Image 1 (cartoon, helix red, strand yellow):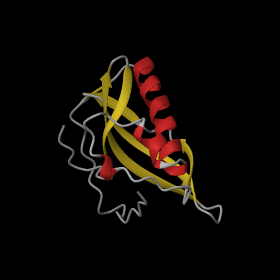
Image 2 (cartoon, one colour):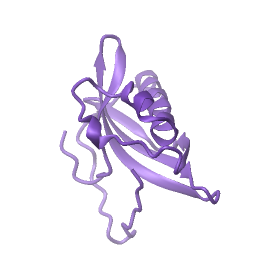
Image 3 (cartoon, one colour):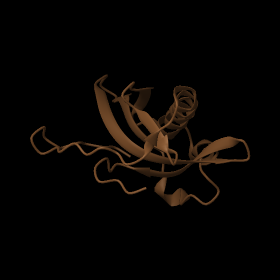
Image 4 (cartoon, helix red, strand yellow):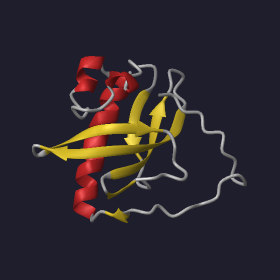
Length: 129
């Protein structure tokens, strides 16, 4: 996904997310997993990306960018809420060396002792869990 955020500061109305923020250790664990996922999503072949996806995820919605952009990091403002919904701000770098910030809402599930990405969305306002 390549996201060009055109929300202007005056157009954005902050709404509190309805979920309960997870404790620090669980958040770090999930954000670390998502860092690995986004590294694969931006730079790896599809078979690697598929390893991160939930068994019932719609894999057609997760076509990687195959190196078009390079994943740099998940920003500290990112948070994970119960039920395992992450509001993620990340930084990627384009081919010209420009850093771009992108926002995602990621639905994660925990199954068989590991995490999987179920849904990835660019919507960050009026989220319904």
